[in-house]
Length: 317
Image 1 (cartoon, rainbow, N blue to C red):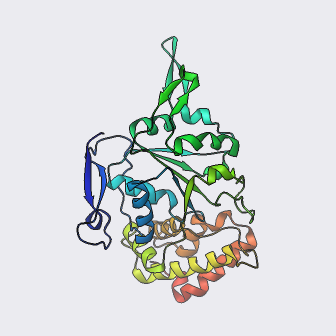
Image 2 (image 1 turned 45 degrees about the vertical axis):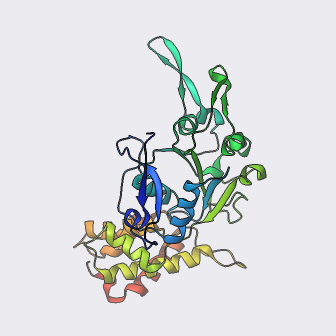
Image 3 (image 1 turned 30 degrees about the vertical axis):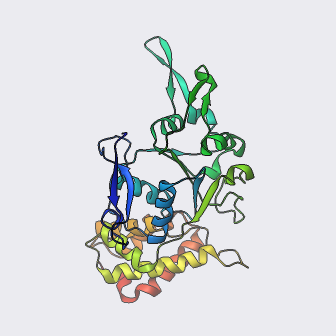
């Protein structure tokens, strides 16, 4: 994992870039922690921010914030997959402690041995550490990452005071539906206001939902048999649902569920799965999203979809 390789940005990520622009990754593509390569449409401005951080962290982490399903984690993992960069991914929760990231003793064949956790492995071997839903974790626990993010050695007292000096390619990413200030909307249960000193160690990048044309490419890439006309109508439904979910600066949103790109892909895929069934788009949308909405909101979303689809609403794809 020590042999590095230069990758051409334009050809590696399928974006427009100046000729000769390269980014460093790794030559070995066999490491089991390299994310699975999936079809992905990169947004140039977000790709630029991630690549700049990978090139030079400067003692920072990178915090990606945005609404659910906007592609925060997949952005990082799909960049890593193309650069052969192993990833240690952790989904945080309110009961997680820093010790779970460092490692723990396990019983093997009658004796105990210390097994390094994702933070220790990433820092030691130069992997990317992704803290998903980091704003669900107790801020006093996350504060334990402050020194290692800045490049200070990681000391594991539980393992006899083992000292791990961070690898030059070690990077820390965090994702969250908030930007560390808590959730004022009440939509994301369990989100906590984070420690200011911890957040001060991160660059913050806002990840919104893709533009309509880009989102269409994503859906057609995942569900290529879906007619383009239907995909465009699905995206129009999603845009209206998101508008009602996000609300405005002055007013809270009218919906408590939203339609992410992930949900759109699910809706399109299910519509093909149930092709030929009566009211297939209605049925697929219910499974993809609205079955978990309150009855009034479910009815409102289906009414929006029926208005957008028109005569297509009761047809088959």
